[in-house]
Image 1 (cartoon, one colour):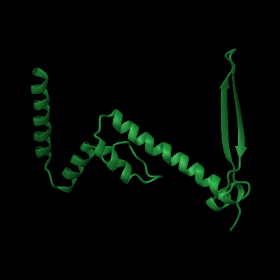
Image 2 (cartoon, rainbow, N blue to C red):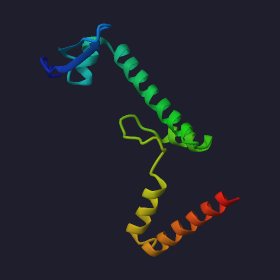
Image 3 (cartoon, rainbow, N blue to C red):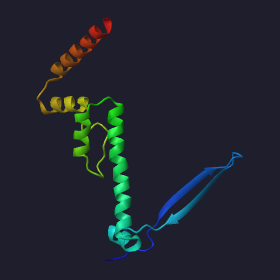
Image 4 (cartoon, rainbow, N blue to C red):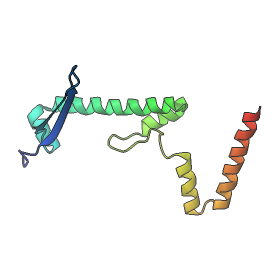
Amino acid sequence: MADKIGVKTVEKATETNPGGQERTLDFDVDYGDTLEISIERYGEKLVHDYFFNTARLRVQGIARRMLQMGRGDAEVLEAVDKWVPGEISRGTGGKSEIAKLAERVKSGKMSKEELIALLSAELEEEDDDSDE
């Protein structure tokens, strides 16, 4: 295992004191450049605990955003089940409906005219619902 000593991450801390003066301090921290180095330096338990806590916060955030968006329990649970740490999630549990429709048009499964008709019908339904 080649230890890459000297690989540092620049961190920044900024604080505004009660008098309104801002103070910023830049500093270097060497976390280790690989998982092996991090485990060697800080221990397997600590490295796993940090991963676990970060992953837990991320998946809770996805679920929270989906609940705020009014998504149903089944949809939220499906998104959580499919979530993979490290992959970008937009909190929807998958592609948006617009993205799915765009894929159908691009693949030839739906024509642009059919898409326009579908959207027009949907908008008319919403207008009818708001009139009541």
